[in-house]
Image (cartoon, rainbow, N blue to C red; front, side, top):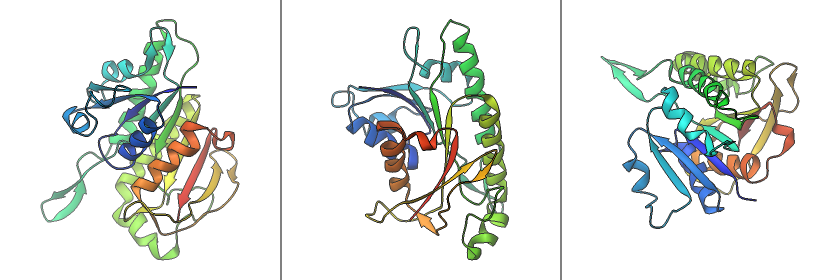
Length: 242
């Protein structure tokens, strides 16, 4: 059965990889993009009729609301949000362009869902968000050697993702949080290992590793959460690594 999937943050990285594989499987996709040409140059309308690109910002309730309806009176089946901050230089120090990009994006999505429901829609999409390892409240989920990088250099973006996760869990929406290990390299044939946490009750299984590629994360999201969603990931955190 064909599904309709809304994407936020699909112009690059994990989101783009998931969008490519979802489109290739024949599902209809709606992608919100501040610069639509970034996607239409990759997916021309003439060859990608199952993609709708909407111009807008993931922090704009009106723009996000447009992406949440597959058709009048019907929610999209799934939302995939992989928005994140971009690295910038603050003088001589590295930083990010928006320290609250993820938490604001989640607040906007939750508000947009409420707005759309005012029009009589019931239910809601399953929400998949891209986060990161190194934030577990139930024990170490990264190698010991990576602790300085995660807890010092990446402290600010990780705080933002933590608030994003908390807002999603508290919202009452159906969700899966995907926490990949550190991004490196391109698509590979390495086996992907998955650990699972319940955000309320704790660790169910463990997978600790150093790296994984954005392409492999996007493909895993498509295969495990979109094409045939495995119920063991419903309302859970999936920690994935090679």
